[in-house]
Length: 193
Image 1 (cartoon, rainbow, N blue to C red):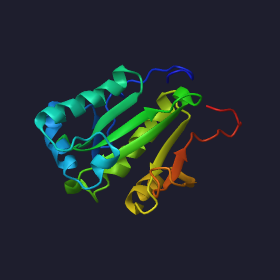
Image 2: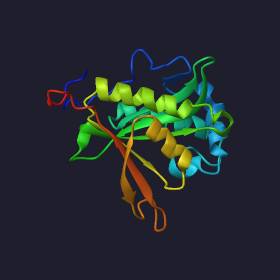
Image 3: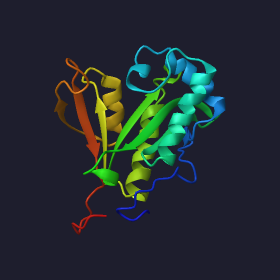
Image 4: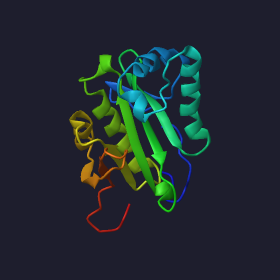
């Protein structure tokens, strides 16, 4: 485990997997996933998925994902089907700005339409939550969901996040966001981990 206050985060080693989902860094073999995501009516609006898509823009997306690790802002991983290593989505962990700093990180995710309703997002978020709270200095993970995005809210709740409240007009003039968070359990002795 990294000591509290350590500002480094690396890709989990070994890669995180539960036998159904595997998280790993993005690669050029994942361009098909990025292309499908670019055609989704929702995914590009809240991400850096390129629209319109081209292979050059897909490669630039991969480089942006890798840059989170090298510039210290967090990490972005491909969600893959562990049985065939096909990328089906993305899971990001991004540090919040000070004063929260390296102890609070935001979680974001998406799954392409052809891979939805198979539990990939829930499994991926669970893997990340367990790893981040046990093996990094992160003490709080946050995630936002639009109030009407019931599937995304279910993913967060199934992964252990608790609803904290609604941030009014947070995502735009008429677009609220529901804040969710998860923190490590407090041991019986009352001392933080």
